[in-house]
Structure formats: structure tokens, C-alpha cells
Amino acid sequence: MREAGIVGTVAGHAKSEATRKAALEIGFCDEVFATAAEAVKDADLVVLAVPVGAMSAIAAEIGPHLKPGACVSDVGSVKQAVIEAVAPHIPEGVDFVPAHPLAGTEHSGPHSGFASLFRNRWCLLTPTPQSRPEAVAQLRAFWEGMGANVDEMDAPHHDLVLAVVSHTPHLIAFTMVGVADHLGRVSNSEVIKYSASGFRDFTRIAASDPTMWRDVFLTNKEATLDILGRFTEELFMLQRAIRMEDGEQLHAYFTRTRAIRRGIIDAGQDTAAPDFGRVAAAVGDTSPNRKE
Ligand SMILES: NC(=O)c1ccc[n+]([C@@H]2O[C@H](COP(=O)([O-])OP(=O)(O)OC[C@H]3O[C@@H](n4cnc5c(N)ncnc54)[C@H](O)[C@@H]3O)[C@@H](O)[C@H]2O)c1
Ligand SMILES: O=C(O)C(=O)C[C@]1(C(=O)O)C=C[C@@H](O)C=C1
Image 1 (cartoon, rainbow, N blue to C red):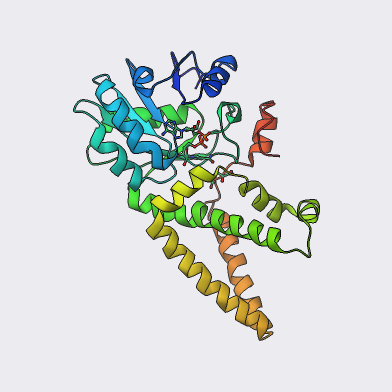
Image 2 (image 1 turned 45 degrees about the vertical axis):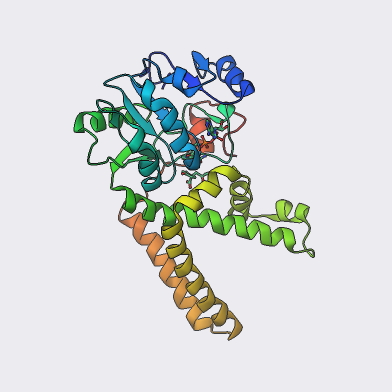
């Protein structure tokens, strides 16, 4: 926000004094407050950036202190649950426009932010029927100002899409790292040492914040279970093909998945930015927390 010059004063709240101190020291915030109620006083835009399970409590705390005409948004990874948690606490005359930037790393806390984090990444807005178009347009401009590409969709669809592209893949990564850990015959140091890029990313993802991910699965339960069910069915089918030495079936399956991936690229839909490392390097970001 600062780099793009689209913000005046940044007021922050964090529960821990150490986090508030760090946010001030690195210039992430101009002011910090021990309570969310104080932080939102006089704010034009309030962005809730807590785990999805904490959204309701924080919305209840700030509700009575919001300035008329303010806009409340959030960055939660699940949208329907956030709307149910936050909307009841938004007073008349205040807008609520839920949002989800599809960008992040496995690291937490103020030191993990870097200016290019949202550049050329998607940010999905999931307005509610009560969100005024002017407020949605303003939030769109806010994210575009930070270099993000913005799309709008309804919250249930967002949750299904994210179950496919983020939540279930994370669960698979968590599980695979757990499997590697349980396997006594391959040591943990070998897992790291010999992991090729795919599994290396699994281990990176497995280091993500446990509270954040617990809340994602508890609040996007239906969609994740749906996708996980489909995943397990296909996995069993492949497992059987391996056991039966059915090379034809394996080859046909992998041919299909290759065609899907190539189809996505040929259709010009692979609009994701290059990985953070390259983006960060291109802008000279020296954040120690950016992706390798
Ligand atoms: N990390 C990612 O990749 C990513 C990407 C997009 C969206 N998100 C979403 O963004 C939100 C924040 O995630 P993050 O990665 O910035 O996490 P983070 O751990 O860096 O920050 C979350 C902060 O919320 C605080 N917190 C927790 N419960 C609280 C409560 N009840 N009241 C006040 N503060 C509380 C924590 O102490 C922590 O400082 C989550 O909803 C997450 O789903 C994360
Ligand atoms: O690269 C990562 O660390 C991420 O997993 C970021 C990621 C994702 O792409 O799935 C994780 C959760 C979010 O809600 C948005 C982004």
C-alpha cells in the first residue's frame, strides 16, 4: 500500500506486544493499538487479517466503533464462513466487501510481508447483496493499486474453487509430509536433501500456520470433503492400476492430465505470476521470508 502510494495512515492491531512493536519498527504501521476497537476508530478502510475462526470475535469487537461511511473488508481464505461471521456485526452505514488475495507464503507475522506480495496475483472479491457497488469498485481499485488482478464471484463458488486449487492440495501436502515423517526407512534429512522441486514445495507448505489451516478446513468443510472424496476415488483407481500393472490405464490417465494442463496454458488462462522468488528478485526485494 505504501509503495503504491495508496494509503494515508496505517493503524494496526495485534494481540501480542512483540508483534505490535515489530510492526512499528519495520514501518509496517504508523500507529499500533492493543485493541481492535481503538485501531478502527476513524478508519476509512478496515481489513481483517486474522484466522477465519477469529473473524466473528474481532468483528463483534469493532462493530460499535466503526466510522459511518467506512468500508470493512478481510483477507480470509474462506468466504462464506467469513460473511456469516462478520456481516451481523456491521452497522448500518458501513460497507462490507469480503476479499481474498490468492497470495501468501508459509510464514506469519509482520516480517513476512513484502511489497511485491500481491503483484500480478489474483484477488477475489465476494460482495454480498448488501455491498454497495461504489464500495466494491473502491476495494477493486485498492487491490489493483497493489498490482493484483481482481475478479468477483459469489462466496459459495469461491469456496468450491479454492477447495480445488488451494485447500485440498494443502491437505495432500500436509499428509505427504506426515507420511514421509512416519516412514522410518527414509530419514527426515534425506527427505529434505533429496526432495525435488515438487516435494520441496510440499515441505514448504507443511510449514504453514496450523491455526490458519485448521480454520480453513473447519470452515470450508463441505467443499473440501467433496473434492477430497473425488481425489480419493481417483487415487484408489490409480492405486489399483499400479497393483494390476495396468500400464495402459496409467498412461491414459497421465496423457489426459497433461492435456488438461497444456489446454489451460494454450487457452491463455495460466495468468498466474511467476513465483514470488522471481518477482521479488525483479524488484530487488530482500525479504528473508520470500519464497526461495
Ligand atoms: N498465509 C497465506 O498464504 C494467506 C493467503 C491469503 C489469505 N490468508 C488469510 O489471511 C488471514 C491471516 O493470515 P496470515 O497468513 O496473515 O496470518 P498471520 O499469522 O501472519 O497473522 C494472523 C494474525 O492474527 C492474529 N490473531 C489470531 N487470532 C486473533 C484474534 N482472535 N484477535 C486478534 N488477532 C488474532 C495472530 O496472532 C496473528 O498475528 C487468514 O484468514 C488466512 O486464511 C492467508
Ligand atoms: O504459497 C503459499 O504458501 C500458499 O499456499 C498461498 C495460498 C495458496 O496459493 O494456496 C494459501 C492460502 C491462501 O488463502 C492463498 C494463497
